[in-house]
Amino acid sequence: MVLIFRTLFAVKELKKPRSYLRSKFIDSVRLHVKGGTGGTGLPKFGGLGGQGGCVYCVGKEDANLRNIMGKFRGKTITAGHGEDSRKTKIVGTPGADVKLEVPLGITVYRDDGKVLGSIDKEDDTVIIARGGPGGTPETNFLGHFGQVHHIRLDLKLIADIGLVGFPNAGKSSLLKAISRAKPKIANYPFTTIKPNKGIIFYEDLRQISIADLPGLIEGAHVNVGLGHSFLKHVERTKLLLFIADVQGFQLNPKYPIRSCLETILLLNKELELYDDELLQKPAVLAVNKMDLPGSEEILKNIKEAYRDVKTILQNVPEDLRPNKVIAFEDIIGISALKRGESIAELKNILRKRLDEYADENDPNIVHPSKFLQQTRAMIRERGSKVT
Ligand SMILES: Nc1nc2c(ncn2[C@@H]2O[C@H](COP(=O)(O)OP(=O)(O)OP(=O)(O)O)[C@@H](O)[C@H]2O)c(=O)[nH]1
Ligand SMILES: [Mg+2]
Image (cartoon, rainbow, N blue to C red; front, side, top):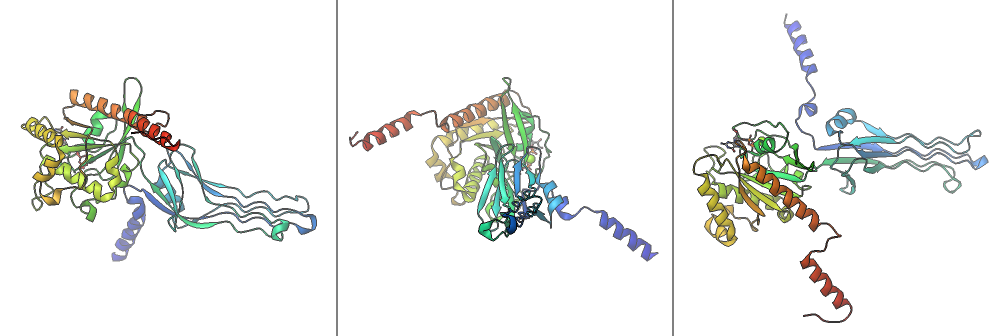
């Protein structure tokens, strides 16, 4: 009897998916790749060996790292070997290439940290292991081995807007209100444990992508909560949309109660600790849950505080102070739950700010401040002096 139960239990255990397949979100995969070996030449006839095949990555919108991991984990991905030169075929056929379809937003790293390339658009290609050349008179007709590497595919979501906020602030509710995405929403922290992407549609068919990330809390830099691990996904966004609960946040009774303004400053600080370059991105602040009583007053105070950044820093405890306070382009009150006018207004603001960002980064458009700088530099180069 015991034996039967043990056997049944063992079979059940075997059926469980492997732990790496059970994990929720995969944004990094390590692979072993090998280029094909070049074919041997034929000295008698001056025959050339075929070139070894290459392993390369190609960007595809619908590819995902989970499939790659399931297929190639623990294996070596090897391209075809070049054909040897023969009497009947003097030039050997090159080895077959291996094409690995990867999602957009991938950066390919070699084990020594060297970046081999990145894939941002559909059909972008990066060679990850080159095949060895075939044998020629210069190489004594001997084919060479192909490259062998351990590589890491690191995914950073590509979205126009990245949502940053404390847990429970309403990030997923906003994503749902503003796009057709259907994220999980619940009244407890860390409902979202993997990034979600949605598309905001406009009447004139313009589309803007927005990424909802797991909540960030104070101490994320020392791995409190889900830590900083998901912040890399905002690196490739063009605009940061901060979302704060008008009523503030308290993780549990052991943690201090943080007011709405304090949560905003703490987010600011966590981003700074992760990578202060993120603070250069244009940022919009949405204060959420404006349907709750007393929220107008809180929003008014926040807007007031951001009019003079220096006073904000004076009035908050030292442990909440970031070095550089983000100058939000806009501060707006919204209700992701009740939706209405505020969501439509936010949609317009986001679009406007992204258009400005696009203009600023367009090399064909010269802005007045840049124009003055460029003119001065030009005149200086010619030896004249401008004052
Ligand atoms: N009253 C009110 N409640 C809201 C509003 N927006 C969201 N909520 C509620 O706040 C709770 C948290 O919402 P979520 O959208 O899951 O919050 P989140 O920021 O995605 O949370 P995490 O995924 O845990 O980081 C839910 O119970 C929502 O119904 C709002 O505008 N007003
Ligand atoms: Mg969420």
